[in-house]
Image 1 (cartoon, helix red, strand yellow):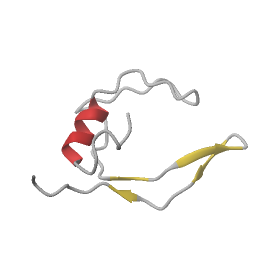
Image 2 (image 1 turned 60 degrees about the vertical axis):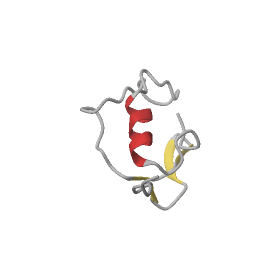
Image 3 (image 1 turned 120 degrees about the vertical axis):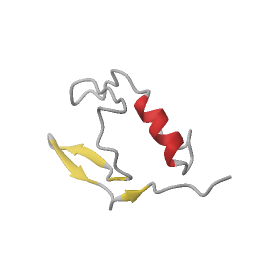
Image 4 (image 1 turned 90 degrees about the vertical axis):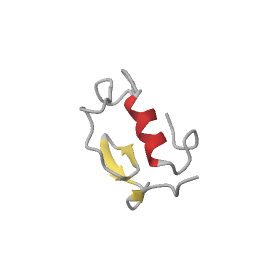
Length: 69
């Protein structure tokens, strides 16, 4: 799942993320999201694994709300 599928539309992004089941990133337990299993945030930071530790790679990215069509 990635935001190029949904564009800046927060509702579409949340629907896509909430449909994620057993996502295996290889670094954590498989991730499953649903309406009752996420923080509901509108921003995130990109991380990468370096030397066995997570390192922040971006300032917070704000998804915000897309303007109505």
